[in-house]
Length: 388
Image 1 (tube, one colour):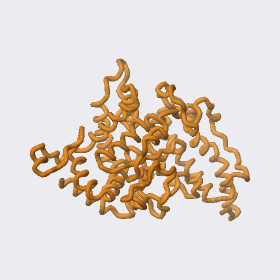
Image 2 (image 1 turned 90 degrees about the horizontal axis):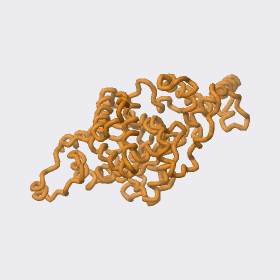
Image 3 (image 1 turned 30 degrees about the vertical axis):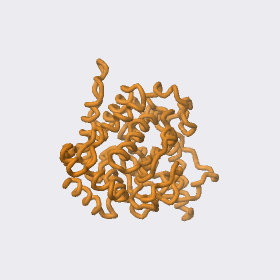
Image 4 (image 1 turned 135 degrees about the vertical axis):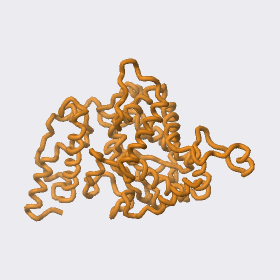
């Protein structure tokens, strides 16, 4: 009980200027900096040396614990297949192997939820049945952990709004090693896409219950919509609702690799199949699992050939929305430069630059392909002293 209270107090005392909150941004900033006209922070794309706000040592410990939990749940690798490297990408490969090991996405989702619960300490321990009966305490859930049991009892039941805020802050603090940079915001009056049911009264217009991930590291590394859905979104929603006592709705954007964690919003059964248990991205290695499903219209077509390599640097057309806007052009240039840094760091994982180019998403190719034109047009506007 004492560790729970200490952790909660530390989270409550986090200053508003901490890395978990975005300074000087609207309560619900759009994910796309090109549409928003805001300068993109290159740190929203994970590069070499990235670590969460609690430091690289804790990130390394969390990654090791995650890999150990995965390893204990996986069947043996096929004979002759080497073990995944002890890196972030190796952990993603282990998750991919986990999904391949189950006959249905539902079974993989349940196992992923158990792995997530297993990351939490079993302290303080769940009281034994005689003591629970004496104190009239509820029984634990299946595969429950002590920390989760006491959190539901002490926070979720008496104060659901405080519980949602604590969960949002803790996810931002302890989860960036997995999903990349993020920040806490407030649930807006109208969500997009709108929720299938009304936001629960206790969470209406609540501050600090929305977590924004501008570019999810796991989704980008996995490159697979079904891996996102069965190994992350669905088990995470179920974990928070059942074992933390807080409803959660996750809204991924497969075009921009972004995600929203909407604490206090109930997902509906109809919505469970909305975000891709279907089509995947061009580099997805699990396409055979998805042949029985029709990909949503929003996904890039696997059959579409990628643009030529190296990317073109054509001049921008005057009809382009960012043609006369310095902020928009600066955002595009920052995005392209951050992508170049990331690609340089990851080049060793590909045969050559051409293969790396082929396996990039359409949005990344577009940003890189426009970089030369954007840089030239930005120089013209700054030289003229014009632009919006």
